[in-house]
Length: 186
Picture 1 (cartoon, rainbow, N blue to C red):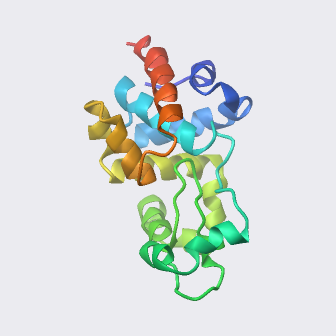
Picture 2 (tube, rainbow, N blue to C red):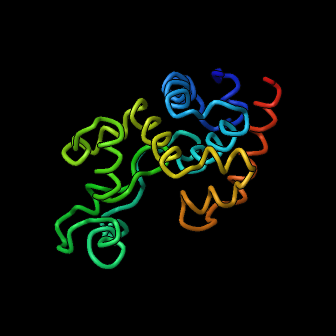
């Protein structure tokens, strides 16, 4: 089951021309990671829609001061970044449609996508549509989100992606639109 550009624009109307850029990558990534039913696709598209500002951002926004939270301290340590203020917070900022963040997550994602550690050397790969979509679908599958989508556990999906319920209202609106568009396909 593939999604078309027009369907994606119904779900993510602010995506504009980015919809056409991402549709092939999203379709490939969703097939690859069994995001292949209307329920799974609707939840996935709603979550990546929110996380990426409707496909407009594949790199976490913020300057050096904002990103310093990933460079030193407890959060940096939790993400596997070095304890020194050496810029790895910027290097391993959130990237991709679900915002893979931190050394450990980049390493795991790299092993999952490439079977090597190339993302540690070239984290910017996750800014390319193919790898932005693939990394999001990889994260989705690794965290058991297909099964949660099958049971309509959208808040739990949000917590697994975001660590909380940030942006829940927007996510729910996107999910409602996605369900409406995708249920018409069945």
